[in-house]
Image 1 (cartoon, rainbow, N blue to C red):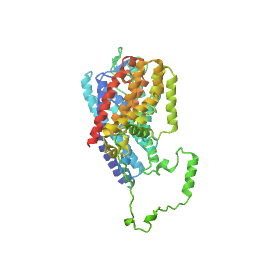
Image 2: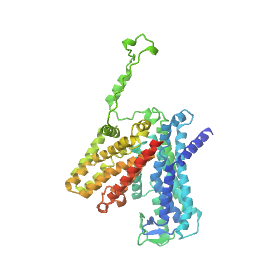
Image 3: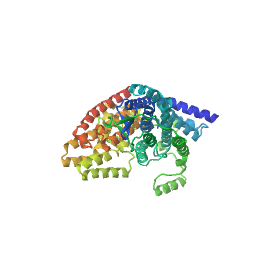
Image 4: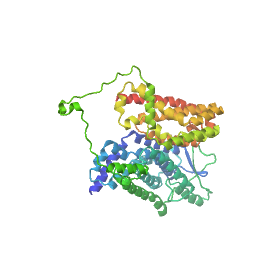
Length: 540
């Protein structure tokens, strides 16, 4: 009973803390708008050349499927901060001193994540009723066809995402920015593989289940359904509307969805196994040394630790025998302040802070990408090597505007003379220099090829990316918004040639349309937002 009570209070406290954040309201509003866009026809989901009549079954399925995909991606970044917050605030050390076990604590965090998703799902479910009336194709409300997709498609997936977020926070190499970036690629790769190799054990989003159910209904209606799911911004010209009463929930299909609840339980148990309970020497990875240090360093460390050493304080001859209270104190006088401000020195310090901790192999890969961009053709350099070269320093840019708060040096930095005019431009320029250096190979190739439009797009990208990182970092105080937003923007824009998001002008269409120039204007707006955000922080 005590364990259940502790679990309840863990879930309740963490849930209330999350729903009071602006990030919760932003994601909730974006989810509602996405569902609205699908229902009113701004975005169309079709199965082959068919779409369903907007009755309760189709509206419920449409809202559940789109929300499942969106929250699987964006929702992860909203809930992946439970353990980190307890570490940062010191609450974790207090909990570690209580009888609350690791399984109870980790399970409580996973359940609080799930509760946040459940509130979003319930809100969207209520909104779906109104959306059906807005569409007006079928005004009869049928409860089970409307609710079932939320219960059996959306919530099991959210259980798996909730547990995954907790697991990532317990793994030493995934709890930070690397985990934020890696999750996006793992999720996209998993969804793609599951769609190409249909299996109930891989159907995280329920797409294969939806296709299988619609194929059975199409056969009974005498329709020819050849498979395929498409999401488009405009309605397909030859789309056919059919009345579909939704998925027939057999025991086999229900079991396939509850399977993801079992996956969530397994992930929670793994997280409890590796969780260090806020003790660096605890947990699986504290118990076993899994670091990549060379063997000779470990041997030297053991050898030094095995020696006995006596530390004798050094006492100046003139103070020997003098009581401590009467000993003279010699202080080094402060040098006079320089007559002028040296911006170059501050910029150099910011560059060193940005690149601090990078290993030799990081620089080797960055150099290899630059060389590949230099020796390739102008088109290949823009479409392939430049996006790769500018995803590599993403974790460096993500610390812009956040580093001072993360290391609790903000009060020192912001109390210096003119931090807005001196320190903030140095941070921004350091990020721009990183972009120029990592993309230098492509820049030289564009110069040699005489590709002036491509060179302009390259320059815009070098300004836009660090400015986006700085603005998001200053306003959020966290590196997570940039890590999530930039990876999605990079994947959909330069890598998949979506013209509206192609800030690098990777595709010939976006380059000819002058899309990078729009991002130049956005860069100016983001820089202004960063300045306003820092001014706001200085007034606090």
